[in-house]
Image (cartoon, rainbow, N blue to C red):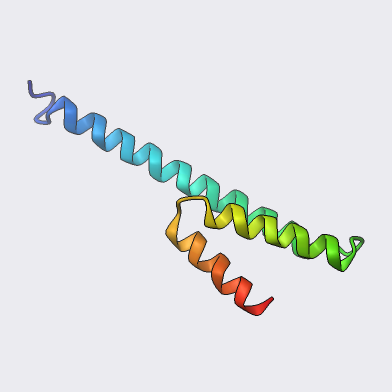
Length: 79
């Protein structure tokens, strides 16, 4: 069947993709905020900061968002 000139399956696919993009964007924003907060912490030891940074990188690289994973790998190269 056609719905407003579009196949309902196509509409569901478009919605799913939009939701997926929204989730990816939300993840990117959240990870960015976490990284900013991590850099602003001045009261933790170097060891704690390194552990938190490594955890952030692991989560970024496991996110399934290629640009975020690539950014994390680039950051690791500086650490």
